[in-house]
Image (cartoon, one colour):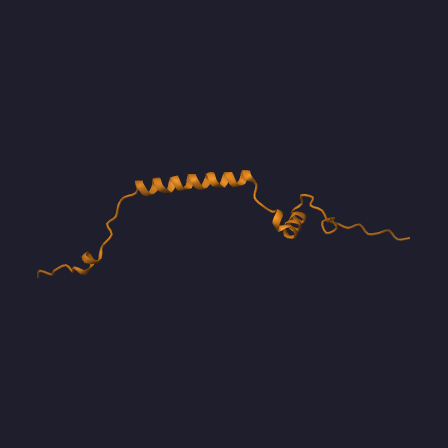
Length: 82
């Protein structure tokens, strides 16, 4: 009688979600309707976006003002007095 060869990995044989990356990937692919970010993650990202907006506004207000040329100023050419 010959012995059955041991498999190196059980990942391919597993049919339930065990927490392993490969299993989770398969489960996520099979159940797209059940996949959603956690409330904690969503709240964290919302807080990060608010903080980012506040920082951006502060940068814009603290920066120096630049004059933007309008059409009238661009049309006027400097006169040459030679």
